[in-house]
Length: 285
Picture (tube, rainbow, N blue to C red):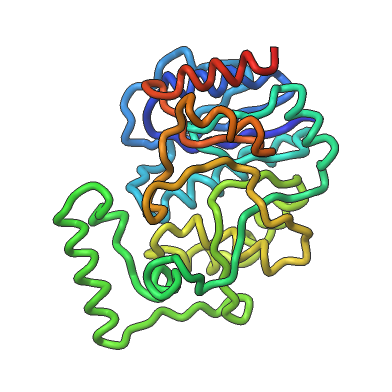
């Protein structure tokens, strides 16, 4: 069984190179790199690696969702690919290559995604509903990158709230789901999502101006489908503080990672995680 690895990345190309080198010709690897990146090392170029730079991706903007859907379209055009994983450039596989293949062959018709009904306690902004109910100008103001953009974004959302402005969500009877961005799913699930998006172009357009749209768009679509999903992303992630960003994993996390039952671990960096990755590699030798 051949599989697809879909990767969104924007920096740390040493880590990205180490990641793509893990996969043999039983995988096709589709990598979208933020268009703002100027130079991509030749070492990432491999026969089974497809590189794209279609979108600029400021944090929290809909362009990350667009890049993900683009990669799904590219991957599904390869008729021999039967299983699909979405990861980041700072992920690394937890099992050995052989064990990863065996797991996915055994579970080839199963879908793994973290999802939950919105609103959800712990998600800021009315349990996450503010992300959808108001316009967020992440793509232009870039609040994740500068204080002026952050303050102006907060002001505009506060103004919309004060004026009683709310955006409508008229799909799936308003049943919204949030969840993890990253997943491992069957070809059936990917084809279902792409057919829905093609038949309902307004659905994807509705997520323009949504904050971190990738954490809501596909979880809502799939959770409202009749497809079977296991509510588990099979990703090992340690969240900092209130969950703002993943902690960087190091050798101290080794035991937790290899006994987690997860397929991928995040977040790895070339500066801090080399020892950890080497221990994971040697664990299976």
